[in-house]
Length: 482
Ligand SMILES: [Cu+2]
Image 1 (tube, rainbow, N blue to C red):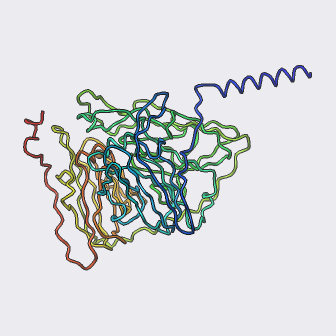
Image 2: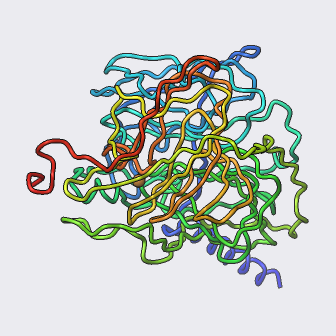
């Protein structure tokens, strides 16, 4: 008996050591936390943009990083605190920072800031008291956004609630950043049209396995990729969605699957029974990809496991108590200004437009009054989906393709091909110039961005530009384009 036990113990030890050495199992890791300095209500952080050589997906790759990590380090802020984030630029090109989704003055979160090589810039602001949730930070450098973002200049940003009333704030939580393996991709017409894609990484790892300590965990999902759409599904069980784009949903929503476009976030709860293995899969999604030049379709054609969750050795627990508290939804009066925002493209040359114009930072497209509410009809006239992102002000979803949908606050909204999505925006709290754009970084770069100026209420409002047919510059038409 004794001998048999010893043999069994040996076998167990042998098996577990094999499992540990199994090269197929990659252990999940959360993004590295960014150490800051805190005293009282003040918090200071430094992000250094730099060129780094990293081992990712079994390859040695040259990336652009914040503080040498891919993705960038986890920046955790607290609601109400006074924050100073200093961006140091150790790159050989200009860069800057956008705090995606945080409701901040465009004078602080200013996409037109240019930090020259060797320079630095401090973003100083108070985190609004009512904010808590999942955000991210990334480069927004006009003319270099797409290449810099693809090279790695992005990281997760969490805001902890001032008063953590929601029990899930105390749950086991993991921050999951989806981002493609960096690599050189020349921006030819195919890349401009379809966006850069490569091997999908989860916190810099290929399909890792997360052993959870608890039978319920919260995953803060961030799509930080340039162009990749994620259609996420658990192989066995439902995703319980509690927040989208850093804003609470009215309650927990059980979802069979979850579409996460570039820029979008979702906080989901996952239940794991005793020692259960759950696979988070990325399903095929046809966002409408053009086959051009040397690049044929990037659209995923098969299901891939992006993350394996392994539950603890304890019985499953009951559904956790969730007390979400979304900001109140707008009560629309029916007399709000309706604005058309038309997304367009031309194939030769590959260019993208909003209301017939490619982005010009010296041109204001829309003028609005601070405090006003508008209805934006986001009309996609192209054969591909575009994720529409508005800085500074959240959008309240109203209709998708003419169909009324339950209200939800979003900062990035997918506009399906040949479809219209209607949102309401309340321009409250900030004045100044801000931007809206497609969050496929290559489309933003190729013109699909516009400028919005919010004027103090009561001041005369200049006329906004009306939609026109797309115009291409001289020498850029189909005959001269190539
Ligand atoms: Cu787009």
